[in-house]
Amino acid sequence: MHLLAIESSCDDTSAAVLRDGEILSNCIANQTAHAEYGGVVPEVASRAHQMNIIPVVDLALKKAGVQKEDLDAIAFTRGPGLLGSLLVGVSFTKAFAMSLDIPMIEVNHMNAHVLAHFAEDPKPAFPFLCLTVSGGHTQIVLVRDYLDMEVIGTTIDDAAGEAFDKTGKILGLPYPAGPHIDRLAKEGQPVFPFTEPRIEGLDFSFSGLKTSILYYLQKRVKENPDFVKENMADICASVQSRIISILLNKLVKAAEQTGIKEIAIAGGVSANSGLRRALQEKGKELGWNTYIPAFQYCTDNAGMIAVAGYRKYLAGEFVGQDVTAEARLKMT
Amino acid sequence: MELIIKELDALPDAAQQLLDYAGDRNIFCFSGNLGAGKTTFIKALCAHLDVREAVTSPTYSLINEYTYPDDFGNEKVLRHMDLYRLNQPEEAFAIGLEDYLYGDDLTFIEWFEIVEDWLPDDAVIIKIEMLPDSSRKMIFL
Figure 1 (tube, each protein chain N blue to C red):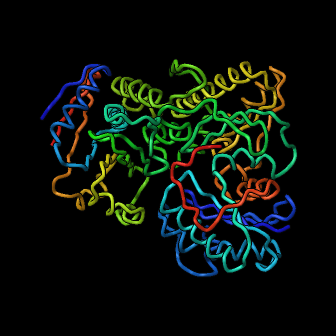
Figure 2 (cartoon, rainbow over the protein chains, first blue to last red):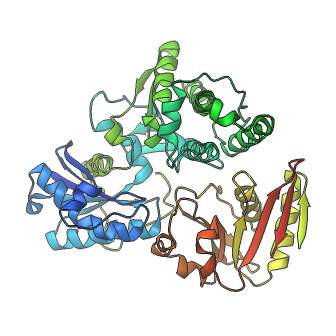
């Protein structure tokens, strides 16, 4: 069977083609995809999705070597995300499905981040825990089966990716700051004492960390105006190490509470090299099997929507033309 | 109107004072440096309005929507927006900002400066400033 998948929940427009569970193409609209049609891609705009969606679908089909007449179903991100952006994907899907007379499959973006682990080997065994971390999300998900998941911990304020970005802003680094902090942290030592917040249960908080970093730096800059510049690598290492310890300490707690030793991470922040290394070390120490998806399946992409859509196809879960985008879609 | 907030416990009261001050005005713009407490105050406003869902930062998602009951128990929508990631006013219009600015729903906006020229005349401006003893000064305009 052939399945087309569409993802348009936030900044990037993406399309993927899957055959019998295997991803044939996974394209994200960028200057390359757009060059064929001319024009530029604005950084943030749902109008950009309208410009990008046809070219990126076309590209995904061509790369996969699949004709649109060969498609058996189309999967799309229904939510959560930015409503204007989601609407573009949903409307495209409806028209496409109707013209080809094929069924539609709705996918929850957050479920799909978890199921990205089934795009390639090695695949985690059920049940497993997945820490999904990105610019907009930080959650621990208990995954019982492909279509049976439960959020057991989540951020009560900022996401981990936002903690990287906002700290980067304080340090004068470009947006998004995560990759810059990751790079600079490698040259430094975590010598500055940014405290870990005390939050009940498995929930996270990163808002206080941002403020404590700000206060600390303001104080030190008063004594030495060049403090940030002179200590950039150590500050980055300290920030990164604290964010990672907040994430991993809750993950350890979740593993203890559930007795699960299959541990995965997903989402854009799982590209962070410090987090990857720390997870692997923690896994060795505690006897976990750890899973980190390939980079192209970490960030927002339609490949993960295709994997999730395929599982729903096998389960016979389709939706009708009356489906609408849902900005605050809850995980099921 | 001006308030000095010495501790987090004072935020519910500050939320009530802001809503009293605003009356029928429904667009609220929050100004203040990173870490000043804009999101924290908006969380307090949402709690005060009886929003039941967890209020989290909209920096990445740009707009978060919540529901709350009005005085008659009807479900109303409120929006929490954050324009921090945007570089040009056009990007704000591309996400539907005009509809929200000139609609009837309660709308809380952080990092609104990029669209300052397009705000309705009766928008409420909330300035939050960090004082040396780490208490906060709030000015409502």
